Length: 165
Image 1 (cartoon, rainbow, N blue to C red):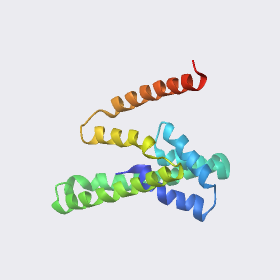
Image 2 (image 1 turned 120 degrees about the vertical axis):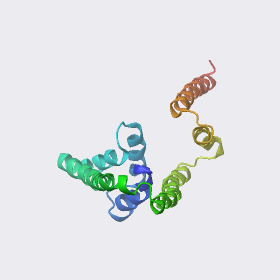
Image 3 (image 1 turned 30 degrees about the horizontal axis):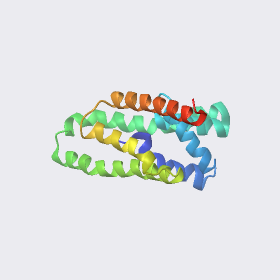
Image 4 (image 1 turned 120 degrees about the horizontal axis):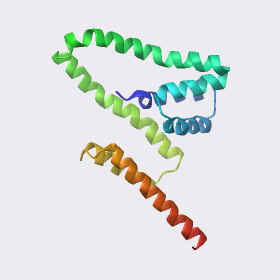
């Protein structure tokens, strides 16, 4: 529920504010790169930070540190979940967790928007995309393809406008 994005605020506080492993700008550059990489967000972030601090050994141990707790928790839950999945209390707990996960994902998104001075002219694309996916059940792949085509066309338009072609 939420994955690496839900942990982003906590990771930023630990890496940037408390331990001073990197600057805010470097952290958000890291996030931009990690978002474009295939694989698990939290693992990719841990690999980068571990490698930056301690080389290959740091990358290995930080990736293990990011993966093992979740792996063990999921393994334990999987072992017992079939017995409790239909329990009304468990269902209510999961329903109660959902808004918290949304808040944990929105907090870094709002901070990123403020930090990069994104106004309404830029923010409408992710908002419309989220509504199309969530409310109208449009395939995320289709939304990504349309946004990519739109970005290329906009880039061509801006290039021609700047160079008066």
